[in-house]
Image (cartoon, rainbow, N blue to C red; front, side, top):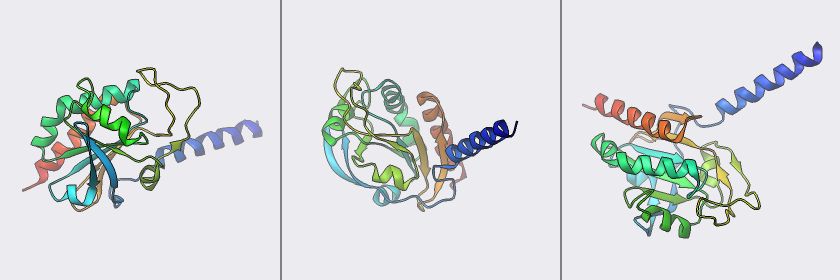
Length: 194
């Protein structure tokens, strides 16, 4: 009985750790300075600069050209006008190379040239947001059959306010629900703006 109680305690501790890992609302968002791609063209992205125009939805995802990430990118792309109406911009961040992201950002089935995706190849930005990063797993392939030779950040979205604070942290959701809740969060922010 004592062993079962100990195992139950460890399990609860692990669950608590997993649910408290990412930065929380009210925390300061670490700046992001990465190579990003929009419509197949690479450029230097800086979060502080983007925040001058309004809130930014920063969504971390495991990898371009994988099932859930394909759904999430497509959903963001099809709803990007709603984010813009709420005054927000969107940035996807993964450990993909900028070359892969140039393809993904322009791909009409996914980002469709409508949202930027940034390369955090070493996972440093994901870790700064207190996300778990898994190492590359040999033999894994993307939805096109190409090798996945990079690590993976956990799927979590942050809504960052113009003052650099996190307004919402969204994790543990399906890709489409993640987008829907991010949109609700920026619409809520927009409704509070005078």
